[in-house]
Length: 295
Image (cartoon, rainbow, N blue to C red; front, side, top):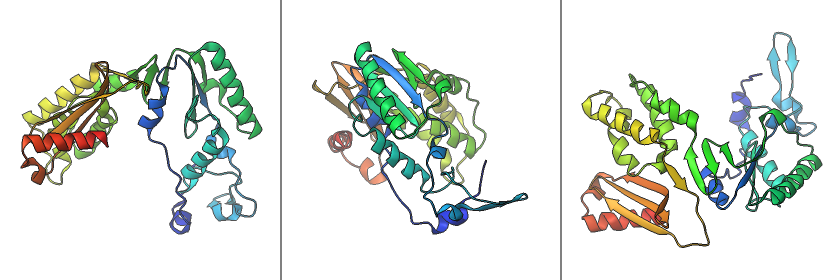
């Protein structure tokens, strides 16, 4: 059911709970060999609205006036409320053998026996708080798993194969909206591509007001970006017990850097320089690239 909640969202006191960054969650998976993914059933609808506040969610249909007894989708505070609940319920396990992003829970372990114990603790916590899973969408005890748009396996992270296939078959954009859709998907995987922003710059220029003109330069950028992403590059998951290496570069209009361990890339970073920074010397640009990389 879809309900227009704009009226109540305009007057409600906003509650903000920090939503974890996906990259920060994935960084915790280094060294894990066994994975299980737990999906909660209708996550938001498992949260009861405080008794006495149900009337605030009332909505009218041709069959009468109704109100929600559980938290619906569409309320501005729903995401923060749900994320806070998950953090409270799973707090003893977070940063140890569980990561959670809304209703997606990933349990990770180094051995199968250890994993069975972790799953038992996780299920006991969910049962204690009366949170129910969608068994059909759960995956247990595997060595490779899709999670939050990525493929996770022993010490490696890859792009989701379905997303790679979508990029391969992406048609030439014919409007700003189509460019926005392609750039949005490509940017999600920017950490896999060295000098991503330099490659994508001609396409991104299409997003400027009144500048949509698809020429050879933008077509070349489009094809190169598709090629880079379609090669399905592999990144290492970080091992925080080992030293890291950072390499930086500057090309006059942009900067790039990458983080690695033992010669294997962990993440790429790139940024387009504003006009004033483009006047800097190469040494200044490279120092700026180092500062941005370390941040």
